[in-house]
Length: 298
Image (cartoon, rainbow, N blue to C red):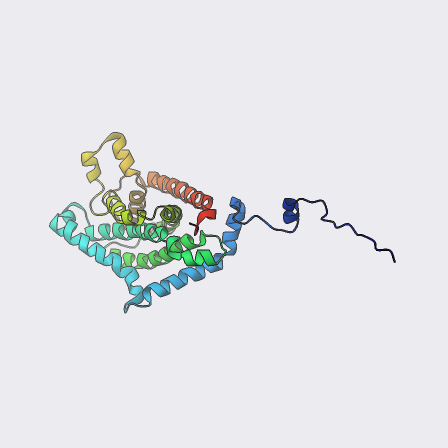
């Protein structure tokens, strides 16, 4: 019987075309931004589970456990109150200085913690990165989710402090919800930026405490924001008052305090907060995505 040769449907195709037809892609290829975003959404359950595991592991070995999530900012606020409120007389310059100070410390620490954990998101998980395939942005996203959870708990403690110091509950307290959303988006972008930059420049983690301390003193956390106007004017004052952390802190004080003296009008502060959140959030995401192929290598 004569054998008949049957031509394959793939005959004559180049390797690239053959791979595309069978759903294959080049190893180490940078996915497109929409594709990368879809992958992240598909891994949302992993991000949630990873963040829960991090909370459990970080607090499981301590006697107070989750209490440290709110105890740390309270202790910091107490130390700053002794120094800046009693020793330096800050309580005489600002009505309800305790609440004013606590709001600044709690809001600032939200961003500070996200920056610190974000810088370690890649370098602290190299074993997982080299062993498993998943979008690497899942790690700084997971770290940011942990800090958001911690801050939500801290917010309830902060509202209790504000009430105990004599502030009434007002409709403006509802402004904390959009403020939390904006600052979380800002922190996420900052955390993504620090995750990639920290993976490339390992020494940056040693500089973060000094940078954040300088940022703390420049954000009117420990003293009335009006002090800037005593020494600055013109464009210099505008630059200082546009500091994103100062903006978020001022909006929190506007929401919780009746007699808070603000750096700008609430309208200007909300516009600044929205712009900062969008710019830092989007650019941080783009910056991290561009480095996707290099994480865990070298």
